[in-house]
Image (cartoon, rainbow, N blue to C red; front, side, top):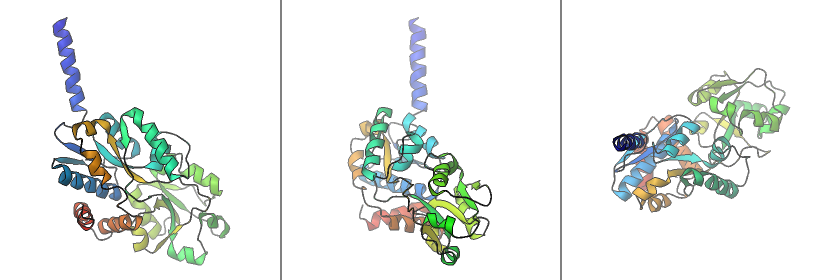
Length: 291
């Protein structure tokens, strides 16, 4: 019996080790789009410099729930999440337009999961309803509500995740009483602006910090009915990482409020529009900020 108990205990330890980040290094993950790759590299490079440790990158993990599960189980130590996404898609709570309230509720909801949400990085990557610049001018579009008074039949395109999110498609249509000429097309996020540019759709749901918006002369419509909650970018950290690396909290604190929406949009465009390496873009940002 003692031998069987010892084997069982050892097996449990091995399984736990396989499912968690290595003890001697930090693992930074990201979701599967450009901004997340840049942010993960900013975190990784900054922590490597501040703590003098090895940081492993695990980019392109997938969508929100996959990244959340990875940090919760310890497969990764941290990644950047957006407060509105955490509130609605992870915690399944009602949205709010108050950034401080959203952050507080997310922190309270994540703590029992063994996760800590540190200070936001400085920008709010809210959803953005985007149209072509020529359409905005032709139909005098400024707000999302203008779409239904323009006299044009609109074709929409959205990301797959937007279809299912509680702060996504269904609520948007209800809030603005939107009607489209056909069922919306759901596609990979990376294809949305191409479809818009090539006149395959007329309206897409992008992100406020997408660098391609300005580069392609597109226009973001104002969320005049305040449907979308705030989406402040903030590192989510497995609390065990702070136990292994006590200086990690101070290192992350140094990044708080350092990235503006304009700066994030510029970095996104540097990668997507200018085809620069995400790691180098992150390095240039840290150098400019003297971090």
